Length: 579
Ligand code: AMP
Image (cartoon, rainbow, N blue to C red; front, side):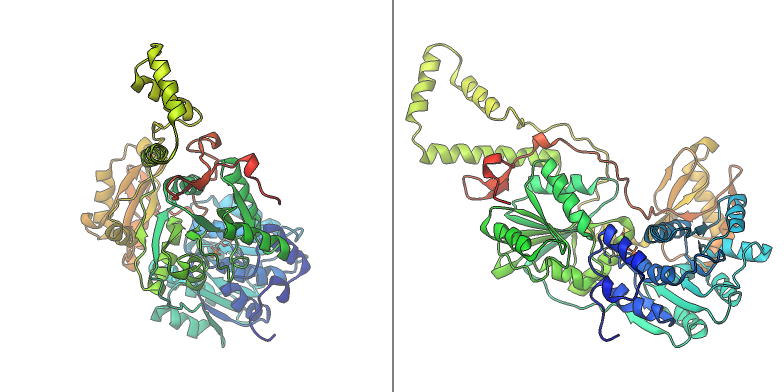
């Protein structure tokens, strides 16, 4: 193959997998996929430097699935992952991509889960195993897992496995797989210990690294928001309601999502259009033209579809889904701040994507400020200001003599005081959406402190873990601190926030714990419960419930206000344009 493939069709993957990719709506391979998949399909070993969010899972899952012999119900590929969350997430990704591979079976294998169920499924026969090193070792020792037919082995997040003290286990497992296997190692960073593993276990690997290009983006005010609990859609609509927005482009990952998000925004009263590679050139140009002319203010696009988009009135870029790499980010935010204007770029970051955030800061050589999401109070204040501006403008420039006479007449008729009449009129004007701030439906999400830089660093150095002891066991934070500080050999001051739940608790611990920390804590008991310390990140992000802050009927349209400053416009039937 010459050059880097730019479409999935260019990759030599089976029609069944291509069909799935079309259905999911992936527009094109992400850079790590484009660079890795051809090598893996060709049977080469691979050393890939990539982090979560780059699409690395599909980069190894698709080639593995492409090579699986479904008729043979023996493990043909093994993926080692540092945490049970990641193991489950990877297994789910395989399951998704294998949608049209009938009879395909994958088994996630991790500690904390009953052995019985795993044994039953192993006995039934599986094609791919994704597991944490400890539990895989258990199975190998008990001879309940046979890896003799493994043709591909993937080490996912190798640096995390190193950090968590699993590297010897990983080596032991590698030594128990056929030497003829293909090996792929993915790691966000390449510390010497990982390089050593690569040298020892990989044969002439292709090295794939997504280059972090640097670029200056001075005209753009960059902010990020941690999507931690609150719906991204709710956050987006608050931004739409509170910011001075002329036009906004919102980036998502898939073609399907462009359409879905446009529909959701429409349902909430904002006029929005999708821009994706499935649309004909004519249709795409039509959307861009409306955006240019100001007939449309919100466009939801994929990276591919927005390539080269040059519309001066775009004041805001929202990275609704984080980009795959820094280059894509730089390209995306470059859609604003054009022709010497100022632009704002907002990045939604799931807690597990913080690494990408840091990589982006490095690439743009600029700190990205943590944003405080507008509160409902902020939005109400802004609307009151706008109302005031409208009144001033009307008093200044309109001939209101007729109405003035009418009010005089009403006062003379003793209907009410002038101020009461004015208040009644204001009430009527805002009957649909009162100006008073509704009660804040907090706390459905956590506001991060405004002093974002410092907090972000602190946050970044702590990782959240779960432990299997909670309120119902009568545990107190003091017990937890005592156990961890004593047994684990770290000081109480190094322990961050502890939160108790009924059956478990979470505790924040330094990211750079010594390797034997986890080993020593394995034997620790608190209130008759084994701690069973595990990384707590939820790899699937916040719950997908369709909660809403307030309804579509509350929304205001996007249109210029009297001062010519843009304000959100309500979709108006008479305003609807031709397509
Ligand atoms: P990962 O880095 O493997 O955790 O993937 C991050 C996210 O990107 C997942 O939600 C995938 O579904 C999504 N994804 C992976 N590859 C693509 C692609 N080529 N196009 C769009 N989304 C993708």
